[in-house]
Length: 154
Image 1 (cartoon, rainbow, N blue to C red):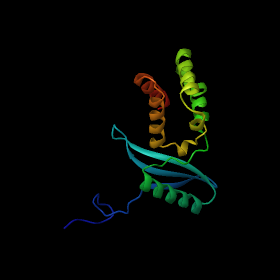
Image 2: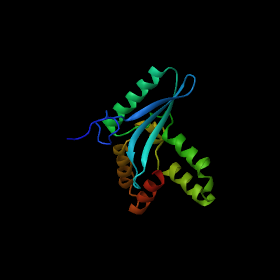
Image 3: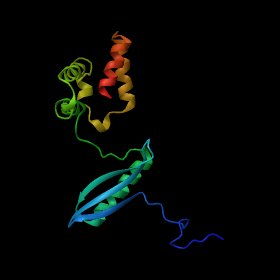
Image 4: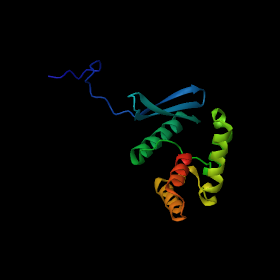
């Protein structure tokens, strides 16, 4: 017979996908387990909730439902793709050479249409990216140019 006591490693436990902890009075950290990375390390998504414990638990449940439904745990961003691209090149691209940053700016200015730049990051889907690649190919650009543009956007 299998020992089902609490101390047993085989004890039946409810499936917990995350946790809620109070960091400061009125500030809660919601931690959602999203899986393992390529090296086998556990990956967690952290989100801060200002309010009550009940609100934090509701946020955790919403994140769990979203992750189970879509596999995505990242909250919806208000930033557009164009804003993100500019931030990436100017702020986060500090380790890149100036020539690389020029190439990124050129790619975003000449190959990424304004409609795509105005798209919210949360609304940017793989299907939309594929449609953009198809548009570049239909314009008669060389396959290498299309591949380079896609690499820059990724």
